[in-house]
Image (cartoon, rainbow over all chains, first blue to last red; front, top):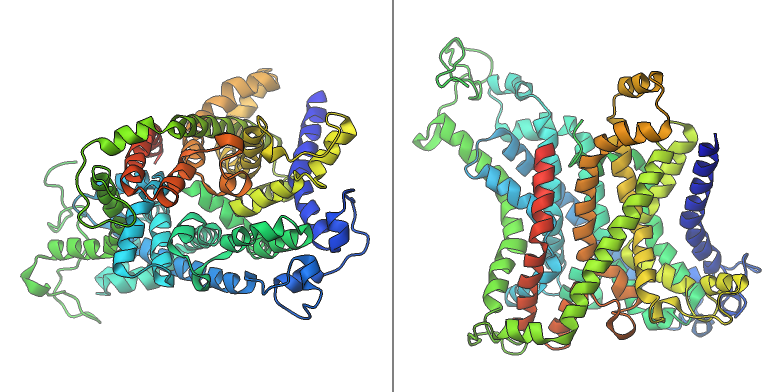
Length: 286
Length: 328
């Protein structure tokens, strides 16, 4: 009986711990500059305004920009565009490559298969940051610094091991007889993969897609090192770059945080189920 | 498996079925091998082609840098002078081990990773237990609780940084209300508090990972066992100890190892909030790599650090591999 009381209290505290910071940034993002920076924090915005968003998104009138710390042109729109380009490309690349590799590892007796799979699993846990030096040098020699392609390859490389693992797991769960009907008819293996197997693997594809898009969108370190120019930098860097400015203007800061987070949260809400499934698919069978 | 097992018509088990019946059927009925390879060899080659892109990509981003990093760790390489850098044996390593911040960074990394794993794991477990029943409310709550994990580390860092600032941080405000402090302080810049704050922020981010894993694990416990035990008169605590816990052990190990390694390697949050903290209190290995690379421009030392880092993680990675493979 009192077990329920404990449980409810615990859940209540947990909800508070998660929801309060989120509420706080939403509330602050619509406060006027004066109110946001005042020494007395207010629990509820007195005069809500969208000024911060206008400035951060480079829309509309910027005449009062300086006061809000948004005097210059905000890098956020450009960086968001970069984020979308990079994340989408990474997602497509990872889905296609992981699908092929997962199917290949699952159905074909490739020499060194077990070793390769073990290596894939281990490289999930590799400190990629430790390898950054060599990657930087390699990119410099190949002219891949500050390019979309370079960033996409790097991030895909990080996300592939886990994705291949998931795809292979899903492919394993489809009986081999499934494609045999088509094989007897003489259809090519590649065609079978994309027209017959892929639809069955839709949950896996969605999970891997979500995981990849999210991983690419949130990724900071590689872009920090490999992308030194504005035209390729992605979203997390938009926040870091403005750090000095944002620390002095809390309204703008919180507005940027929301602009950055809202797309992924929205996507998450739409595809909630697949997220959770995809995360556990690699480790928990059944 | 018997050595010469085959289907009725002589094709060995395990080989893809290709009809050798030569009576005409719609579509091609018999594939003539290209390049004089047997059908079996052809299949294998195709398989290799399928996995090639993935292998190439991972080789480019993992294998090559690993090898190059290993080599560079024995050379006197600097950012400005990379080609034909002279070999200098173990110099880089001795320089590294004499570098004062290394010990601090290593310790901090271990403390950071262990604390986050322990705290997030415990809270995640409790949350999973509280939300395991399939009610409407629980479904919504589970959705809400997952949000921290998908937010970028930089966003979470800024969020906590803002809430703990020294002008009008809500954290200080609450502390003042309670009476612990009498003027606003920046928690992240306070000596002694920086590490706990960083740990707290990371726990906020990482707990949903454990929650989801444990929820999935709880779902695999057969209901019959739970009912049988209930009939025998077991109370909640006993049920947990003897039924739930054994089922969750494997998942606990896998999830904990994963998060330990993940946190150990994590850069974003500490970089955003404290950038190494007041007097290196929150300096961890990832940050140290960044500093060696861009502040000291010493490639040799950075590579040596990379090697040391990998060695440090060998045991956790091995444990993780064993457990997951056993499962899958």
